[in-house]
Amino acid sequence: MNSPICAVLVYVPDVPAALDWYQSAFRGAVRRSLEAFNLTYLEFNGVRLEIVPADAKLSAGSAGTVVYWSVDDFDEALRHFLQAGATLYRGPGHVEDGKQMCMLRDPWDNCIGLYG
Image (tube, rainbow, N blue to C red; front, top):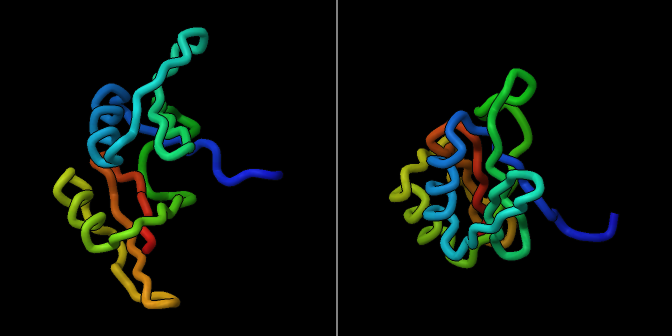
């Protein structure tokens, strides 16, 4: 393994609505398509956010791994995600070097971590 995270898959019951929500929550995310695979995803700072249909094997929700996104201004990022419709799930809490972290839930109960 020789690179940082390249893709995060988010499982949701409504892909078009979730693509819209994630594009507004992750400011600057660009919508891209892989026509051959019938996949539309978001490109955000070199990471692919792949919003994909939930199914019997992988459902939407907060039962698994959480990706924490590094933010320059924690309070502003938290405020932005809350205004976009996320809900606070855990934290915020203070961690090393005066930083904070928290976990938010998207409208489909998937978790998003903020760290900064």
